[in-house]
Every structure is written in structure tokens, then in C-alpha cells.
Image (cartoon, rainbow, N blue to C red; front, side, top):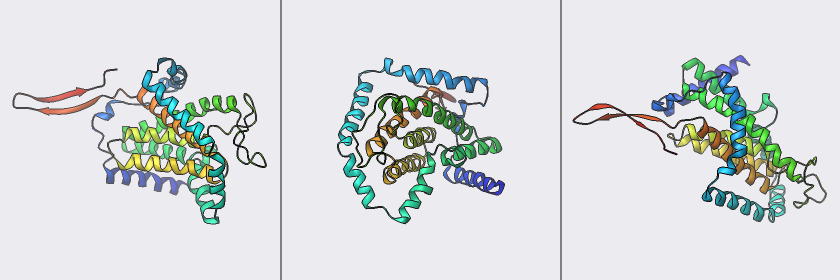
Length: 277
């Protein structure tokens, strides 16, 4: 096991060097530490996320409405999507879905690829004094925990049946609050998109990173439909929910300050660039 861990850390270090992820610049002014303040932020971030809709502007409400409207339309196509996935199952794709993508969002910590990756990033940050790696790891872990807790509010509220729960499957089977059926939204998809948005936000200056992060998240969502564990609409709403959760937590924990050198005929120095709410 220790040899695998050493290999993964070395692989992350090689990837960071090869893609320039070590070149952090002003980003390292934002430090996230594994301390009391970090753990308290789990509570404050959860509070702020739950109360965020109260402060939404018109455009944010329109975006939320668009996602819900699209999900409602997709529900009408859930059965067709399910049938297509079942008709195209093969032994090879079953293994790819189960071992290649499903575990990126699994509930078992020791087999969850996303959490393992965050652990590797943290160790890489500690060993090579890389603040970005540590920041991604700690924000990724917090996002996983906070998202997982909030996720069960809609799951318990809607009580939607999973595709395999009924014979025949019924995408319109909803039991309402406190049911044993927890299909909507997809937990795997939500957690993977939440962590992917943390990674993509941190490394948005490296175009390949968001592409890889969101590709893994998308394929994880598709695998849940392929394995008949979720409806397509479960995955869509989970992806949107996870993306927003990750963005909210990342933005709340980053000042967005950039330090850039300035050289003119009159002066040489630095300038601070920061967003004004």
C-alpha cells in the first residue's frame, strides 16, 4: 500500500511539474489550514449555503428555474434513456462503469477515488510545500462533507423511487418526505461535480484541468444511469447541485486577490487586483 501511495504522490508531482501547476503566483496568498477555523467553517459554510437563496438576484433565480425546468422535461424522457442504457450494456462497459467511474462518488471512504485523490493532493502539498495542492485537498474534503449533508434534504423531501425499485420501473413514483426511496438527486454525481468544481476553479488557469475534472464527473453521472441506479433527471439535477455547491464553497474560501508585477517608465512594483462585490 505504501508503494502505491508513493507512486501516486510522485505521479501528482510529475503532473504538476509537467503542466506548470507548481507555478502558483498570487494564488498562494489564500491559505487554508487544517485548524480550528477550518473545522468551524464547515458550520458557517453550511449555514451560508442554506440561506443563500434568500440573497439570490433575478439572474440566479432564472438560472435555478432553467435547471428545474430542464429537469422536469427530462423526467418525461427518463424511461427512454433507461431503456437505451440497458439495451447497450456489455460486460466490458459494466466493468468500466463499476471500477472506472462509479467509485469517484462512492460512499465508502476507502474506495472513493475523489477522496483518495484529495488525500494525495494534501500529501503532495505537505511534501513539496505547495499551497494550491493543500488548498484543493482541504476545500475538496469540506465540499464532500457539506454537500453530502445538505444533499439529503431533497432526497428525503422527494422520496423518488430508483429505476430498479419497481417492476416495471416508474419515473413518476414519488413517496414524498421521509421515504426509504432516495433517488433524486444522484449522490455520486453531486459529490463528484462538487469536488470537480473545486479543482477546476483552483486550476482554471490550466485549461486541461477543468476538462479532465468535469469529464470524470460527467462520466460518473452517466455510469449511474448505465448501471440502472439512477434516472437521467437524477443525474442532471445532481450535476447542477454539485457544481453550485463547489463554486459556493470555493468562492467563500478565496479572496480572489491576485498580485501582479507592474513595470512602467516611471515605476516598478506590484499591483493588487481583487473583485468588488
